[in-house]
Amino acid sequence: MKDSIENYIRSCSKCSKFNIQRRKAPGLLQPIDPPSEVFQVLGLDWWGPAPVLSNEYKYILVITDRLSGYVIAKASPNNTAQTTAQILMENVILVHGAPDKIITDQGQHFNNELIAAMSALIGSKHVFSTPYHLQTNGQTERFNATFATQLSKYCDEEKSNWDLYLPSIVYAYNHGQHRSTGFTPYQLVFARMPCNPFDRPHTEFKFSRPNGYWTELQRFKAIANKMARSNIQYQQTLTKQRYDRNRSSPVYNIGDLVWLKILIDRSKLDERYRGPYRITDKITAVNYMLDDGDGALVAHVNNLLPVYERLV
View 1 (cartoon, one colour):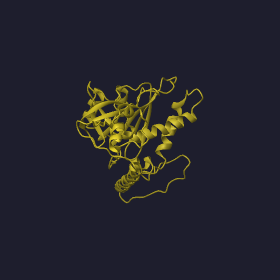
View 2 (cartoon, one colour):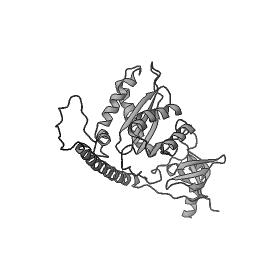
View 3 (spheres, one colour):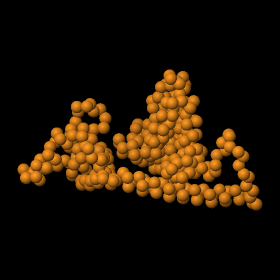
View 4 (tube, helix red, strand yellow):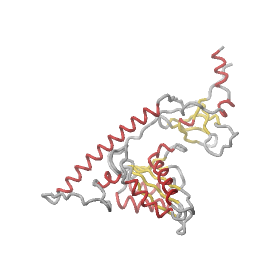
């Protein structure tokens, strides 16, 4: 009798669609292995629109290095594909070289023929994050939240001068020590301490040979990158342990029916899940391809619930 009642409740379509899920979202954390070198893997994200300035700036392209955490942020009047490619070329590729991998969301300013052609030309792999799952590009998203708060505090009441404070906020972020790496982003990128305006002069080093500085620099850089990567992996392990605690890890098979969480355009009285949808492919351990009748869509396991068949 108990099993029959539990099955009847679990197989209730309206309950699945409307009930609030009190448990932690399903799916274990899948840490992304950090790269071994700076500017090897980059995360890109457009922030905005902000209040339009006299120079028509209202967007910011944020570029984050996945190893060092170093950030490049450039204000722009638009967030088109052409502007994205231009900022990336002028501020990263022509300065630090071409990255091996670029991670972005699936917005039109990233998912287009121009960015695809540029990525192919420079030999970079373009990876798209799962829709409505910000953790894939979490490092960039965290900076977005940080600098947006700082801009709000420093700019005037009319929000008409926020671009004046952007370079200072980025500077402070890049020169602050990150717990995940144990270094400042500036240290890992340039392999030296910054010469801040109010610091005492640094101790001078003398080398017996002209190439001595280069040899010593490469030695320090290799050690620092290895330590930073090790620290990131350690912090990822701690984060995963906390995240996975008391969290389910459902595994769906091709052909299974699931409910999909509604993340946008939902009023207070609307259903929380829609569907059911049939799983057509398993992309990764936590990402699935669903058939919605009109085509295919990718969903993270966090946003899925199983459909239970009602037993007669």
